[in-house]
Length: 346
Ligand code: TRP
Image 1 (cartoon, rainbow, N blue to C red):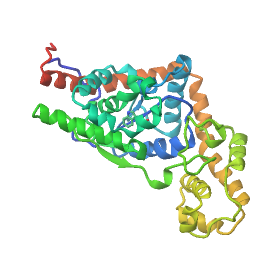
Image 2 (tube, helix red, strand yellow):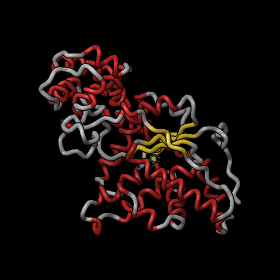
Image 3 (cartoon, protein in one colour):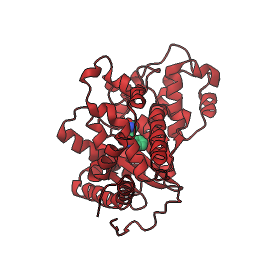
């Protein structure tokens, strides 16, 4: 078996290891920030953290190549501007570490067609036009399993929409370990997001805030100007009533409830406190304050992001450094797996 030099010396298999991926497709919005990125920032103190910009996942639906490159750098810039430290963590784009695709093939020989057929995200994304969806969109969860298992991640932060994919990764890991009678892969555990940070569309409180929503007024981007943020909050759908008095009342009014969640997450205030602060007040007054609270959160990140994006060479160097560190770990996993399944790999 090949021996690899260890550059990333302080990585220990017994550590708590987090892996998460963010797709570089479309622009990052406040739902991505509050629901994922801001939590990564908290996790980086307690876990060895690996954050991947998953460009190979993004191309399961067609991407313009220039837009993909820009978006990859933008996700990195937002990571850094939000406080992720590239020297403490491993931050890289997935395609620069070919072991992801190598392991993905092997795991596709472990996973069963029946398991993939149960994936609800594929059914939702492919819609009625299943025959025309790419094969990559169908096998997407296997690549995601490879991402996680390559680094022996013990924990994966997931929202509701990715829970089923993580369960599949566990099924694959278990079957592989059983097939080859050795615990090669660590079973990853979910780290569930706090419920208050599930941010919904500003136009429809029953839909998640999404990069692909046709209305730009449905989301606040992390690069929006202050005026844009103010306008989007002003136009945000609510109802004709005054602000709710109780948590229970809030929860029955989807749109207002969502705005309260955004306020609470941005201001780092308990939702109950926000509710009592604005109880029975006019929604317009609340919206003015909400705008300010969002701007306080978004503006510093947006300024820093734009600054970072002016130096592409620097950003690309960070990705390449991250890929080098990632390979130190992923190469070892591949060597172990190849050996186990009988590949000659001197
Ligand atoms: N599928 C995830 C999403 O769309 C992104 C992702 C890819 C991911 N690989 C991962 C998330 C590994 C967690 C772990 O949000």
